[in-house]
Image (cartoon, rainbow, N blue to C red; front, side):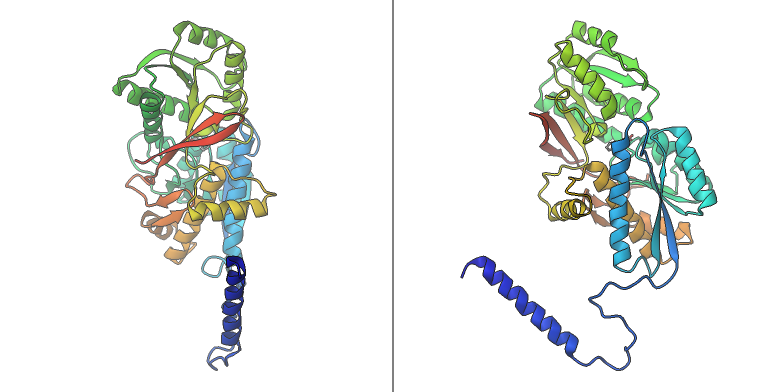
Length: 398
Ligand code: PHE
């Protein structure tokens, strides 16, 4: 007998035992209770949860993955009977990774739909204005993926009590990139390209520069562009002249695709490196080939939580492999719903945020406890674009 048939037999044995247990007479005091092994229908009430994500605009894959990851978590909770007997009703709005549409979406879900909980946004430049509204209106916000420090802490240094996130922050991400560049790629000089108007890009460029120079590296050029630019040849000519060992380009995949393609056409061969913004099924792997980026998760991670999530996500979304955005949106939704459950209320957001502050949650992207700035402390991975694919390189712990 091979090991597989032994397993099947033992499963059958367990099922027989369970059937026997079910057949045993129930104590008379509990006749109305639903059988424990069937999903309970939510007993009463609803909890509206907004998902604000960039479904259109410059980075639509970010929005689709975020929505799909959050919806999977909500579906699983509802199948288990909801949160404290209440059904979770998702309200999805397209906030476009852009401040004005993000503000409109936040006002709409709060003022018209009456939500008290927001998952979102993805992009720091959209999450920051949403956080101002959420904190003014005591709406609890958790951004799955916005990594700029200013999302949870105001420019005055005060923590925003109603805003949390499920990801690490960019001082850490920039440091991981700089250390990897210096220690693993052994580069000594870097050229930085950045969009000053994008909070995430500006911040990550600054944190990389700080760590890179502190570690002995030298910045041999720094040029800015705008998010509307499509022709980067003038900057790339300066890169060619400066001959850096690498180029740091911490922008989103739409810009990365344009820049790396034009760099290859110009014959530039030094590696490009970026951050989580490169993570997209629409990253041009041929153009970005040879590049590296820091990220929150790798689908090659062998932890059982990751394998289970990849399976559930693939089953719901036609075999799609989840990216970091899907994983973090799933974790963010679970953190929120666990916090509502622990607080025992979906009305009092002060109680829910207190529960969130105290949470210890084992997510797909790692374990989450919040520090005094409402940020989790988590590890990062470095991924490489190689032979048309994105492959795992290494993990860096804080
Ligand atoms: N960290 C980015 C930001 O703050 C968003 C992002 C996260 C994009 C993860 C892709 C993957 O704007």
